[in-house]
Length: 419
Ligand SMILES: Cc1cc2nc3c(=O)[nH]c(=O)nc-3n(C[C@H](O)[C@H](O)[C@H](O)COP(=O)(O)O)c2cc1C
Ligand SMILES: CCCCC(=O)C(=O)O
Image (cartoon, rainbow, N blue to C red):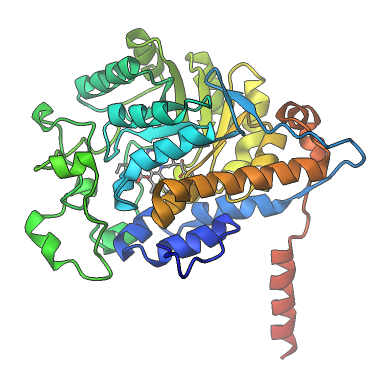
């Protein structure tokens, strides 16, 4: 974390990543940054944006740029939501409360992971207080557990608290094999709780979510120590309450109708990667989909999300919103996803890095950077509104036939072969 004396210059999300993760304990850093298996999908997500040139239009009076967009019946500041990410108090003691305040103040939507270290009620309250002058809002991400009562309780609490939608994550019948987590023997620190779950429900603890033994916390060393509990909630709790560990693996597409039968909230499904599944989502009544490979944390070798976005947009044909996440690190990444037909983007790790860097202020920095870069990209391409980006769509992009990366490799190959 920065000090007043030695404030690094943070201009990009990469800067934020660098300075945030420099000081995070190894176990947390690798949990946040990591992917599954060889991390091909994780790297592919980020690399995919380099496969597209942006074709700018000139002399179009860009003296007024409107970055705002519509999502979940709200007018948000720019087309980027905060992707649900679990256990944010590992990044910063203020955890999800800080993220909610920053997202609310910025006027964007926060996706709260049901595996949060702050209860959904507290998060909503923080968000509401910050949204006095904006239309920021909250949606709740969840898995559907074998014990349906756990999920039904969560949904009813989300309804009562004023969440705008349920995001059902469908790519997690199993946890991806995250080798760093296995190597680090990843455990949820004992001072943190899965604040949305009540231990009395008797739900199973997954091996993935083992909780650190309390007596071990004093043996933390520099590489594995975690931010101390400081917030209202974590200091109040004395026991941990283990949550269920994954989606009910027997789920099928009927789950959408089931959810719609128990709630009037919108149901978005997160984790669609094929045109066929997008079609099924529409047929089964989803209110929207999120094209996502879980930030490369589930099936490794799944395609980069940007790669499959156009075929999914085509098959959906505007019947329901198509949201998108994966590898967004620049405003131009958001721009490219919109050109390829996404209605809305979500950013995961950039927000976590902001949180780790400086709590609420750091999350705000991450969102400000993405918005400012997106605005610059709009102005430099002659696009004055998000609607215009949609209209011009794919005509604003050209596929790169030889990437600088390939050129680099072929140069290296030539040098090698000439030795
Ligand atoms: C540390 C971490 C925790 C995550 N936790 C959840 C979660 O609880 N539920 C979920 O649906 N997705 C979760 N995700 C996936 C994100 O919602 C999102 O799909 C992904 O981070 C997007 O990729 P990006 O990080 O490259 O932006 C998590 C991602 C990370 C990095
Ligand atoms: C620990 C609960 C699941 C979090 C998650 O979805 C992820 O780590 O990617």
